[in-house]
Length: 188
Image (cartoon, rainbow, N blue to C red; front, side, top):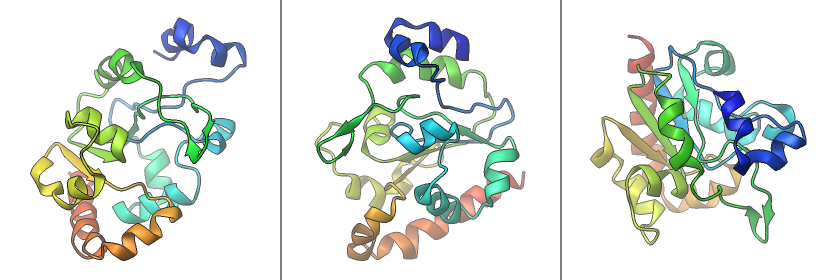
């Protein structure tokens, strides 16, 4: 699959620079994590969620770094498999049409996924078929509406600490339920 993605004309610039698509789809995966796209640090290191955001995400799920990277129980299928570049107020969003072209084909390789964690607006709007005007806070607050297939989350970036302080229900209600569900799935 990696070779097909790299051969795609849409990804030609990355391939010419020797940049490989950053995703992980072990056949044994039970939980899929869909974020926006790899950051520049992830792309340069070749390891997704390898930053303070990843540390927070693993803590939220109650899994160790080893379990996350080495167990074969986690798939990582972001909305774009390449760093899209820098914008005025952060990284650019994933390229349009990328998920439409690749997600279904990639996810067919992991038939045992029981839960998809949707990190941020891009993933939530795409998978939950939401209008772009739908507020992330509302989606995360009503996370139970999307279970058992999807679990929407705010991005685990330390930059979202202000959001978390304004929304104490997230730490009190959402994260304990996420941790419990993840542990239940992993223990099967």
